[in-house]
Image (cartoon, rainbow, N blue to C red; front, top):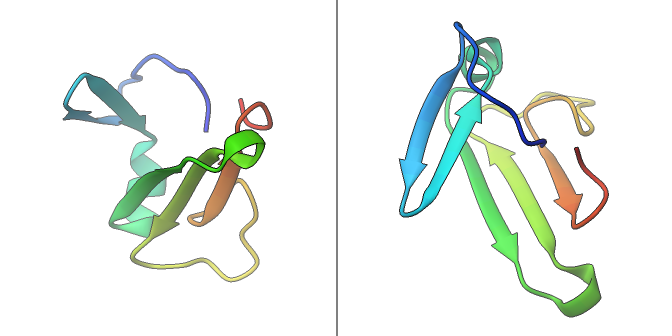
Length: 72
C-alpha cells in the first residue's frame, strides 16, 4: 500500500472522500479487494484482504496488512 497516481492500467474506486488506485494486474489476480482500517492505538493500521488469496503472498500479493508507518 502506497500513495500513488493512477496509471493507464489501474482501476480507481471512490469511497466517501477517499480515492483508491489499484493496479490492474493485481485486480485481475485477486478479483475483489477489501481495505479495512483497524484503530488499535499504536498498532493501528490497514488490513488488506482479497477474494482470491495468493499462497505465500506477503505485502506484495493479494493479502497483506500495513501498520501505520510500515507501508509505502
